[in-house]
Length: 172
Image (cartoon, rainbow, N blue to C red):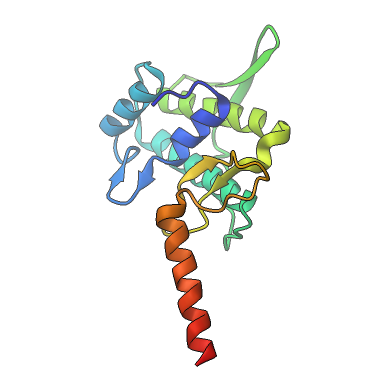
């Protein structure tokens, strides 16, 4: 898995915590995940890991919103992360303002990617699966932008089957 685009990094981060595995569970697994995504080494620290997990939740909730799912309370991005802007030609990126903990660098990279992605016309196609027990984040590449589930064969079938059974019960 490589995060070559802003959306790719956001998807990689948002999809780190599913089912029994959580790539951000501890410093070791976070370092392994980041090396797999970018090929770069990282050091992971406690409080910075909490901020990175908060960023993951925030991104996932925004993606659910793009798919018409309203969550009870939208998480806020980690506000205790002090950032400074860095300019490189026509690119702007955010960096931690203080000592650069690697996990804070990851959060800053994710926030930079999020700002850039939200500014693009295709942002509405950045979605999370409507099955709340799933929540996989993806980019909707359907022609009309109406994709609702990560996989029609799994989450889509479960949702449509449940709707069919509910209609059948009310018809009886």
